[in-house]
Length: 177
Image (cartoon, rainbow, N blue to C red; front, side):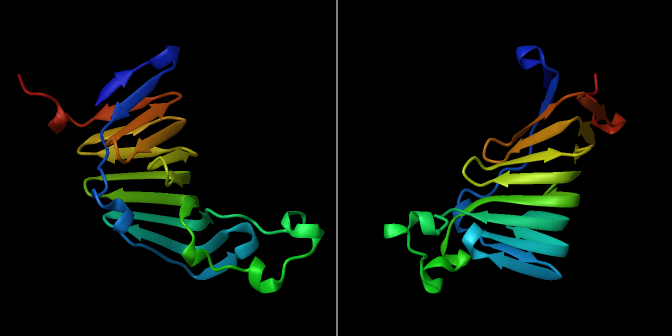
C-alpha cells in the first residue's frame, strides 16, 4: 500500500481485485424484498435485503438504485409537442446498458480477499469504479484503510482514500528484516 498526497491533499492508495477481463460478459444479479421499475426515469429501485452479485463481487445494502442509459421520453421531445404513446414511453430496462448503481444504507462490499463497508457506494460502469462515502472502511490482507471517501478503480486494481486517510497494518503483514 502506498500513501501519498497529490496536490497537497492526504490520500492513501491500495490495490483492489480486478474483475475478469471479460467483465462485460459477466452477468449481474440483484435480489431484494421489493423492486420498483421506473421506465420513464430509466431506473430500477431495489429495497430490503438487497444483494448484487457480479462475478466475484458481492454488494449488500438496504436500498439500491440502478440507472440505465437511454433517452427519457417526454412530451417536449415528441414531434409537435405530442404526448408519446404508452408503449413508446415504457421501454424495458433490460434492453439498456447499465450506467451506474447506487447502494444506500449499511453497504457491504466483498471481492476475493478484500471487503469494505460504508453508508453509500456508487458504481460507475463506464469508468469501472466504486466511490464509497459515509464512514468508508476497506480491508485487504491485514491492512485496514479509512477516510472521508474511498474510490476503488476495479480495472486498475487500485483504490484511493481521501480526507483524513488512516491506514492500519496488522503485525503479521509487516515486512520482516
